[in-house]
Image 1: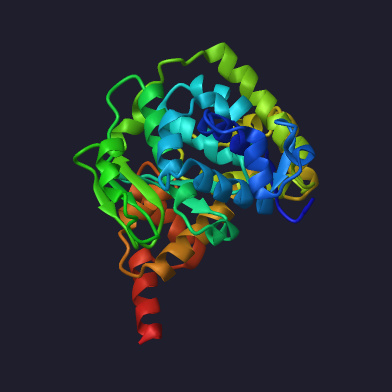
Image 2: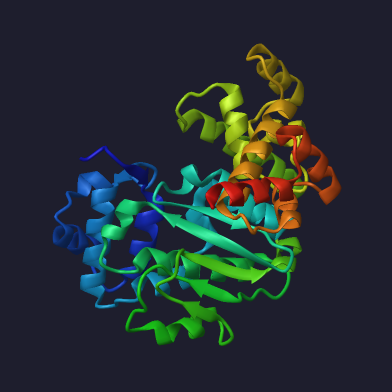
Length: 343
């Protein structure tokens, strides 16, 4: 079995079991040329090559080119295993998305999501593994988009709608089905620069129907421990940098919140960072500084107040003071200097 790229098996196998009510699973394996012994453990892992073979065979045997779209509508949150239960018990929709981002390696290595929060509209960008695009079908793009939308509608305590759906692939022959899944008012953008879903930012504050504070805290610790046990070993400061990057802009991003994500007490985390010659505030400032620099270089006309919000500053004035301490100039002056150098 190829080991160059493995992903948790249940996320692939459970939807396929659902899709094959009229087809024997052994028939699928035979069509794909995969021995049953390679996929007989839902708690195990499966290679990317086998994933693509299974999807291609499922598309062929069902005769449904829009299989990803249809499966995404039907799945339940339990497909995400521990992470799914944790997400369902979260206090609000924003936290739920942050949890999926943080614990995505426990769900799948085939994709990850990134939340871009704006004052009026927010985007959930879906980053698919490049090798997944070897599949001559938008199966994964449609599956992720439909699953996000339909699961969100079931989880939040309130009406959930989306503004736009963007896909990097050309429009498929069945794209007329999209409004039936995502709503009549959704804008569809194919051949786009990214795979993403755009929705109103106020939806991030909607509470979840199944929020359970006690269960949420217990599952959070369990998920952190499971992630730590499967991740390559890295020093503590490296883990903190990664978590800061993943959660930049969160309203409450501080030492206790990062410690909780790592399954540590704040005092223990502080002690580890001190032993590595740094502190949480130093790492937070470092990542903010680098994010600010990258943003202004990549978007020389970018809005400064938007950047301040991205970096988690509640007041733009605080960001201006921090920026001047980092670079010795204001953000506008930084932009002007870069524009002059580019010319």
